[in-house]
Length: 224
Image (tube, rainbow, N blue to C red):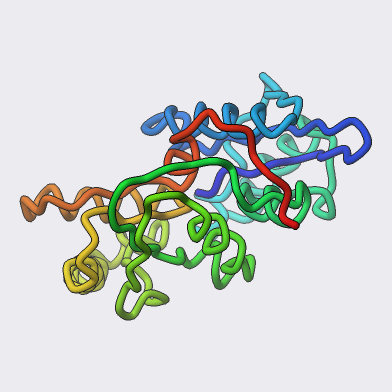
């Protein structure tokens, strides 16, 4: 569910982008924001046209053989290895050594550390660092921030009652934070939480971190 950067070449400063199915189908503006951010940072961005689904949905459903075939196609499409695969904020902070991308956001922001990112990839410092450098933004702590929002891929389909209860709690905690905007790095969580807010007729919005970081055209500065 998290857009990935692949095959980064430090010497040539190029990167290939894997756009997830959710981003490609429902949130193409997230992918467009990623490209703009990276290009402003001086990265030559490539989009392999033969990329498809990475195989995560069938893998999560227990269809490992089918998922392996799809994943093998992705590996061939990008001609890369896990050692050179990065999540967006990880790539910006740890590889490009940038923390200030010149973004500006007037008002409060709360951050939800998504399960795939925080638990699966152990990435938390990087998105928080980037958010802390946004001019005009006031970061509000989200109560019980590390709790799952209830999406979990097919979990929300197989266990809708549990998923709904977890979603209600997440929305309640967003209201408690006092922030009108919740920032996430995962399109699945974005869709799930925004859908819950819409059904409950709540005014808060959920925004992908790439769209937040794409709020200014000013040149980025180095981490140091």
